[in-house]
Length: 335
Image 1 (spheres, rainbow, N blue to C red):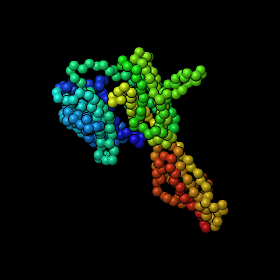
Image 2: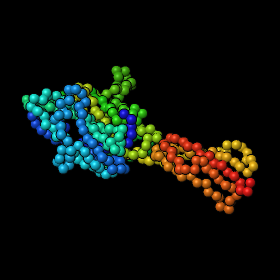
Image 3: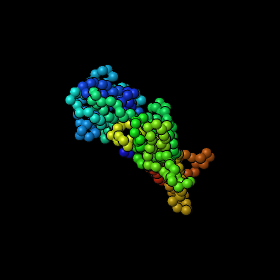
C-alpha cells in the first residue's frame, strides 16, 4: 500500500477481542476520526476477507452514537465519533476464526480512496476452553493527541516487547501492511552460533512459554520528501503456531513540515546586449510541503534604471522534490 496521509482513521475502543459462544450477541466499539482539514461525509461497511468468513457480513449491524442503525457519519475536521459493530452469532454458526475488514469511504471528498481496518471474530463451542493465549504485544505509548514527532528522512527505533503466553514454543514475526518497504526495517535478536565469538541474525523471535519478554526492533525511516502530516501505520504480530490470529497495534506518527526552498539565479547568456539581459530562476522545493509562491521583481533602493519582467507572471505551485524555472527579462529604461 502506498504510504499517504490518512484523512479517515478507525481506532479500536473495546479493550477485549471478539471471542464469543454460538448463539450470543456482542458489540465491538470503534472510534472514527476525521484527521483532514475539511468536513467529511463518511460511509462505513464491513466485508469478509475470505469465502469461509462470508457469514459474518449477515451477522453484523453498524450502530451509531445515538444507538440507531446507521452506517453514515458526518465529521468536522479533527472530530471523532464512536460506532458499534453489533454481532449476532447464530446457534448453528461454525466454530473458528472469521476474518473481516471495516471499510470507510468519503465519496464526496475522496471518491477514489477507501480506508480499511482488518479485524477478526472467533466463534467457539460452549465446551471449548481457552488453551491458546494471545501473546503480549507492547509498543511505546503514542496516541492521536500525542504522536511521535519525526522529520522526514530521519529515523526512529521502536522497541516492541513480545511475551509468549501459550504453553508451546512459538516464533514471532512482525509486518507493517500499511507501509512501503522503503519506510522501515525490522531487526530480530541475534543468537550465538556453535562457533566461539560468532553470532548470526535471525528471521524471527523464538520464545519458550516461561521466557521473559523478548524484543523486536522496528526502525521507521520515512523518505526525505514524505509529505508532512499525521500517519497511523498498523503493526501486525504473527505467531508461527497460529498464523490466522490477527494481532495488531497502531503507532501514531507526525511527520513535521520542512519549508526549504532552493533558489538559483543564472544568466542565459554571458553578455548584456543593447540594454537587455535574460536570466533563469530555478526554484526547487527541498521540503515536504507544497509551496504556493507569488513572485515579484522589486527595485533596489536608489536604483530604478531597469524594468523587470517575469514569465510566468502568475503564482507558482511547487510540490516536494520538484522544480520550476522562471524567466526573468531585464531592460534598461530609455533604450
